Image (cartoon, rainbow, N blue to C red; front, side, top):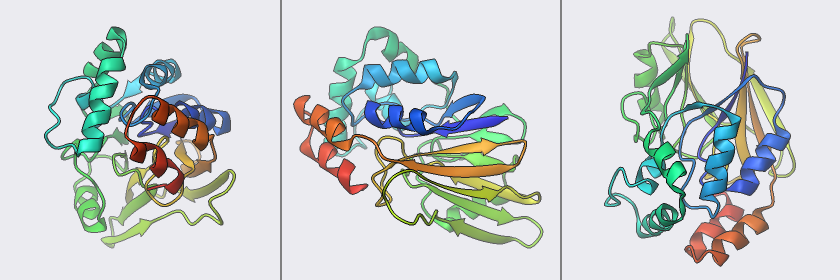
Length: 251
């Protein structure tokens, strides 16, 4: 089965459509959360995401923008965007976001989906040591996570106890590029597809991945989208300027 893994779209319709245009043939789409927040097209992105697939875990912005949690832990810019999004969302999309399941989710054997981490849906899995602790106790060999907006892979070889942290090394930040690696037996993986709508790894291109369970390969993708159009929508909506400017920075 060929699984398309998306995460952290953040209401960026231009980035989502560019990802789908660049995506290879696939059987299912899995979504790791934060469908909304920050961007200017929450209704359109929720609708499009629902068309693409039915397997989701919720993100912290999905909770905040649908009113499930307060905004005490959000910075002022994120909080303002969440309130704006909450006011824009159609009732049917609000209810959809409120009903999204909490991770971890196991849509099939040997595969787990989370937004932050298996031990806390809102945990930022930024450091290799934290990932190795999770991987040592993992019930499945492959975990897909989002939340950090950084495309990367943590792995732990079970026999040796050796861990590795892999960041895709693209030749440039232009055009469409891919990097593929093999999923090996006897090894546990935590893999982040990166952010569709707001990357924070210094590469402004939209990010996603494909997991081929038959070939046991994971392919990272990066692709360009119309950043200027997405920026103009944010500015025209009256959202904080920083949310527009950071799209071009990949930060």
